[in-house]
Image (cartoon, rainbow, N blue to C red; front, top):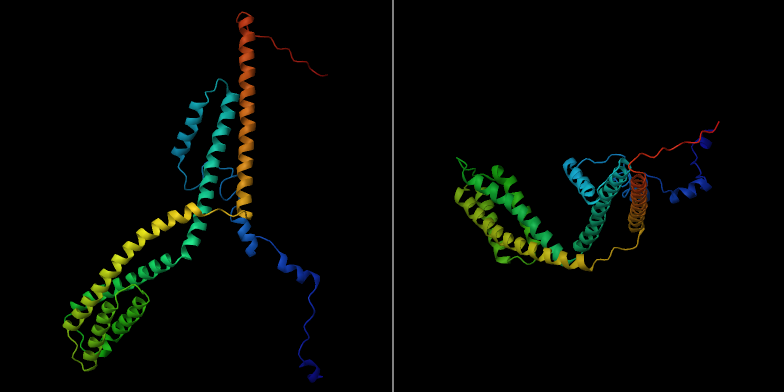
Length: 297
């Protein structure tokens, strides 16, 4: 009996339901998250609120006032239509920002794959590390008394060696500067092993780190200028692919433009009816027209 119980369990063949799990597109799946990233409610394309968090109420009022100034209203019905047009135009601005952000994300993805961006990122990371090393070295110089033994300086020395490893990844950096810094670290370590480390050793290390810092700062500044030029070039050449996101944004735009056309037609019809009513009132000598409603009994 025990032998039977201890036998390994046989795995059951997958059912049809299990086979379909790979095709799920629910909101918690990777495909579902991608599809819901451009949700019309989340981005205010179909939201109930007129002004979303992060938007300015004053900007919305100025936007609406501009529409009322462009399309003067002579009746509450016309004002209601113009207000709807202003709200659609405000939502269209949100859509433009969404399209711009989608385009920028494509540009940034293309940027990260270029050698220029990789060199810039490497230099920026090395500059961040060397800034920390310079800060700690300058603070250590002022210590009274100065720690002379390796046990006291070992964490700092290990951190300095790690910084050198990061700096070495910047291929365009002058190797002599890195070598001088490394020699200063070795000098401090050897003096600390004998218990004779002095502030002069730390001063030499700080000076070597500052030389590397200055060179990296120049490289980062030049890299930023090159990256800006490259970003403009890639942005001009990047064509948004005709994927699900693009189709969804195009559908949002078509819905807004269709609603705008419908409202403009309604506004034109209201104005035509108002002018006809004014003309009829003028022909009647300024008297109001008696409208009799047929009551269905």
